[in-house]
Image (tube, rainbow, N blue to C red; front, top):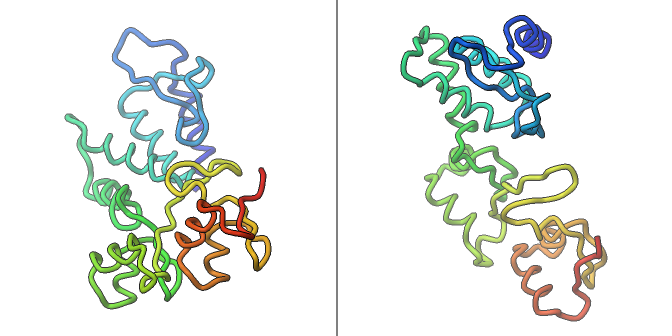
Length: 206
C-alpha cells in the first residue's frame, strides 16, 4: 500500500484549514518528531476518526518510535472501539523492539535491536545484559548501548561525545567507539584519556 498517497488524499478530502464548528482535532501534517513545526501551514483539523487513520498512515510511512506511541495512545482513548485486528496492530506498535523502553545494545556477539534479543542470543537474563552494558568494568568492555540519536549529522542526547572524531597514538578515528574497538578496550577508557589530556589523545575539531 502507498501509505503516503493515501495520507495526502485523506488530508485533502477531510481536512479543515480552520477549526470547524463541530468537534475536530488539530493535526500536524508533518509530525514534529520528523521535522515538522507549529506553523499554520503545517496544521490541519480532522475528525477523531480521520485523525486516528492519519496516524495509522504516518506510523507506516516513517521509522519513528514516537509515531508508534502516538498511534497506540490514540487507540486507547475513551470512546474508541477497536476491531481485534486493529488492537493487535496497536499493541505491536509499542511492544518488543518498538517499545519506548527498548534499547539497542552491542555485545561480543554483535548488535541487537533490544536487550531482550541480546539476552536470548547469550542465553542469559535481560538484567544481566543490561548490567554488563552499563558496566565500566574492563571485563564487560564488549557490552554497551547503541541508543545515541542522530539528527542530520549532529548527535544529540546521551553519548554525544562518542560520535566525535578523535586523534590517538594509533591514528585518527571517526568516533570514540571506533577508537575503543581498535584498542580492544571499552570506549569509556578512551573518553577518560581524552578528558585527562593524555599525550597523543585529542578530539578532532568540528
